[in-house]
Image (tube, rainbow, N blue to C red; front, side, top):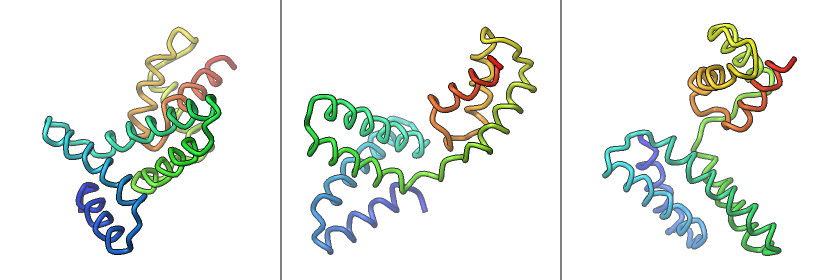
Length: 143
């Protein structure tokens, strides 16, 4: 079952349960998935990762602006979106992946960081955030 179909089913379930907040949040995500599909984008996980990043950025902005209630709402929506994504790599798994990426790309200095990050991100297949991968690669190359 595709993610869009799963979310559509979950919207219907939330409607029956009269869970208004969940319905609204899932409908927004479903609309983004449908828009991406219409535009020819077929990577549903990429759409969900983008939406998750938007929620996290909005949460940080609201917290910085002293709008705790709005920040909590964005955090909740982010958690909801996260349930549809594969689990994130553990630190040990990510470190192993980074070591492999550095070895395969021949990266030896911070100047080679881009190649190693690109390789590691591809190997992570959406199971690690870019900032986290970047930090691990930088740490490994600086050592």
